[in-house]
Structures are given as structure tokens and as C-alpha cells.
View (cartoon, one colour):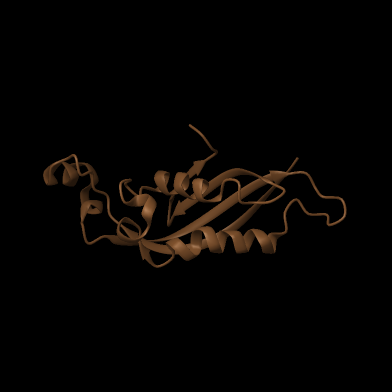
Length: 136
């Protein structure tokens, strides 16, 4: 089994807010991140797939095809967007780094031919990241 990782980058805005809590509780728990106007981050996404090398091409998956899938399924949806307001999966889910990793997994799972999705790693630059390996 070979593991292959492709990296992509995007920028997005978000805020943290739990509708079940009071504004004071949101402020206490989320601090500056509870600003309903949002704030932005630059993200680095790493997607790792696993599979066997196809003998005639020498690929597990064609990296150009993987790049096109990432662009179509993630980057074109998330890049320069306000996640809370413009991305459907965050309508009722707080766009934490952890939830972004899970949402990206859900967007990609089953869409990469000839390989199995192994890991989604998202970095909220400069120094926070979350890994997701499938079902919890």
C-alpha cells in the first residue's frame, strides 16, 4: 500500500457561535472568535490517499486528477468565502478547524478513483491543525 498526499491552500472567513448559548456565553467560550462579523485565516489542506500502484501508469492516482478533484470539491467552494454564511455544511455547524476537516472528508469520500481517502489534515495557519481519518 502506498500513501500519497496532495497539498492545497485557501483563505476563508468564519466566526464561532452556538445558537443555544447566550451572547455572553459565546463570548466567554469563543472570545474574539465570537465576533459575528467574522475573521479570516489562510488554510493549508493536505489530503492523503492510499492504494496500490497501477502497473501500467505507475500511479496510485494521477496527481493532476487529484488536484482537479480538490479544486472542484473543496477549493472552489471554500476559497475567499465566509464559511458560516456561504458554505452549506456550516449553516448549522461551527466551522472550527476540526469541523472543517470532517466536512472536507465528507466532500471527498468516494470521489477519488482508484484510491481510498486516508487522511484529511487542515492547518489553520500559523500553528493549529486537525487530522481526520474517517468515522469517529
